[in-house]
Image 1 (tube, rainbow, N blue to C red):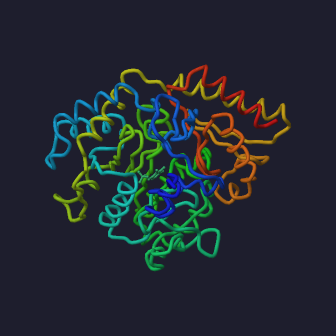
Image 2: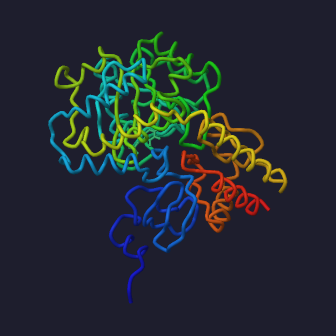
Length: 421
Ligand SMILES: *Cc1c(COP(=O)(O)O)cnc(C)c1O
């Protein structure tokens, strides 16, 4: 008998996947197998065409396979797929990033957001000569050892490893605070500030559902970092080019020392970037003593895709319209919920929203854990029956793209109405 894709996947790859959320364990369902995708739609191996609000977890601001990106990739491929010497396109990418982020004077291109964050920590440690870093529970910065941690025994303090294989002494150099809790930060800075290399934060938390920074929170982090001599690192892997041509820092005015980028700047191909002040970035090899390298760093195909997206975003900024359209959709979802008597919070920023089944929008991770995650899972299943694909976890945010048009919205609103009922 012929084996199913699921059986073959499970026999060939751990959990049948190359990244855990794809296994759909958090929504307790068999995973999807994608065949192809176009615009707002993803088609599965079973031939189902779904409206996609997961969108590869963020990179696809123009939807799937937009012509500008597909053509840029085709053109670049014909010229060679990897050179391991510097290209004009890499320089242009770095210049474009610099032009969009006033805090960035130098850029290093890498191949993933994980690599960008890992490098940020190393260069911060090299630059400051200090060991500890401070992160926030619920913020995700990729899977480097020192960042794969959770709160230890207290609500704020020395971290514990959140994965087997992360040595405790490595986790113990990371401090964990609650997002939006200034008291946690000032307590930790008071005790450990002399050895703190960096405070790393998602300026908009988007890996535990969507949590906006409260007014003054990021300014406070800037002041705390300055007071103890630590660097402030903004992980803008999701927020970079999502809300404006630049990052959340462009909108809020707080200038970090280092910025991590990924997702949108790769146009759906593997890319990451670390940027920051020249004085810090030039501690990287070959000028400085902090080592970092990559055979495929600045890969010409990835950079061609990313450049095509960034140039298009600059030429015709879609942000105001995307935001207005997202607000419309969220209003439709909210009114469907009200009509059905379902209590749901839908925090929304720009073209990102998330669904929390609870009375008040969560301010930090522990409050997210208190929401009704089973309600999200039920919603996920109902919507899938109506050909609407939300992210396969209550902790991931939903994304809109410029390809989500009125017809897509109408179908989505009807699906939500049916699902809530
Ligand atoms: C996705 C993400 C990362 C990791 O990027 P990868 O390309 O998956 O390694 C890091 N930080 C944030 C905020 C992310 O959302």
